[in-house]
Length: 92
Image 1 (tube, rainbow, N blue to C red):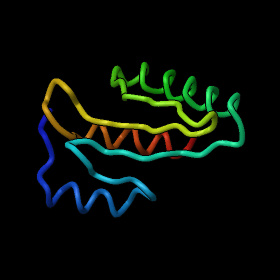
Image 2 (image 1 turned 45 degrees about the horizontal axis):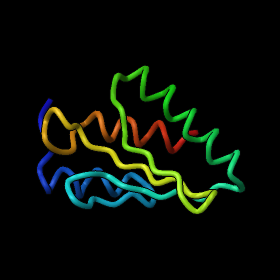
Image 3 (image 1 turned 30 degrees about the vertical axis):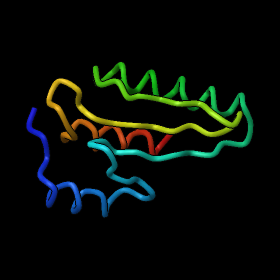
Image 4 (image 1 turned 90 degrees about the vertical axis):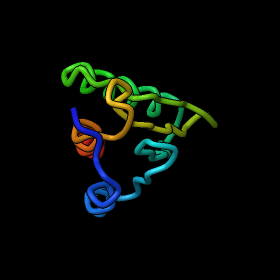
């Protein structure tokens, strides 16, 4: 899997609402209604990630906030797989 260039990253980020490129990964924080909604969101991400065999870093904090961090560890950066999973997460 090829790591995307800075130019490719910038172009693809334009298509994702609210996602940022930071520290070699795609990142976005989602605010949910309550703790249970945040946990449910994490579980849904987990099921979708498992289908793709591509696993994000997930952080639950402040009882209703979920930070999603995507990068392809084996490739050493952001790849097409990260954008594919980000697009799926946006639909959850």
